[in-house]
Image (tube, rainbow, N blue to C red; front, side, top):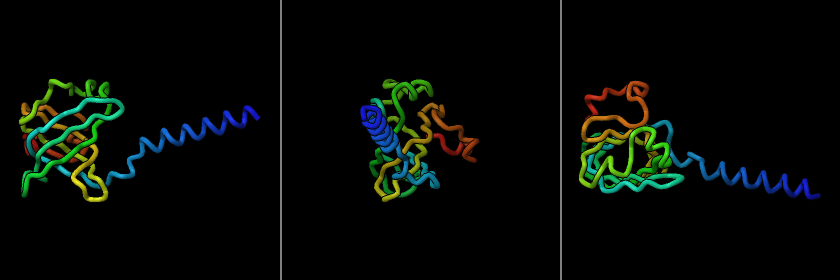
Length: 134
């Protein structure tokens, strides 16, 4: 009986972990390019957050976007630390948007004011770095 209970608890815990890391809320078929200004970056585990005031493709009305990023250690591995960006910095961020249309998404890449790309390789996405510089 003890083995059955342990197996049940293990499976229950595993399901919870996988549910937490689900990306179902994001539309993986879309890539939205946001150009704007940093509001804040909050580096936490398991997910960090980037908030920007931006326009889609640099066109239209500027609005707040809240973007889920990865863990602090993974951000550090791609060169993003708490001192990499500050409020007011011009940035370009590529995201997989929320399916429900709210102004949020999952970060794919971030381009800092100096033109450095952090995250996915733009060439893998069919994008030209020069056109995306903030």
